[in-house]
Image 1 (cartoon, rainbow, N blue to C red):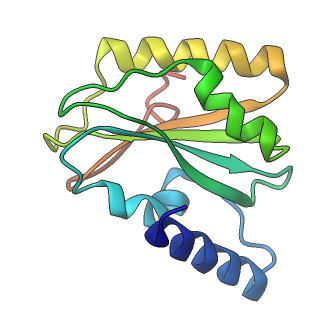
Image 2: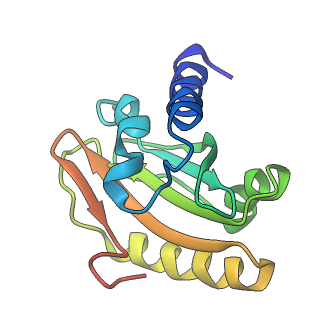
Length: 144
């Protein structure tokens, strides 16, 4: 695991230890852990695994693509979730262009991941698009 990811995970764990009620209850709650990806020149697809109380277990990059797309499949998304015994996940990817609007491909992969999660018993809470301009939540936009 690279040092930046490990540091972010440790910071989240310290925050949780200092505040045992800290939970992911809104998309903005996880955004600080994703900041390192907003300036990347290639798309990075990230999975945040969560426990039953929506506490962060881990933040992992599962795919690195090109400047405007990444190839992803539910098996790569759910592998870390199964490994971490996660109850739920949040997925995210960056848009290097800064545009926060989801593509049709973004919406399609979200639907596929949601279906796969239902079969596996691992809930997809949200799909976030992040950039230097902020974040877009497909859940809040009613596209989950």
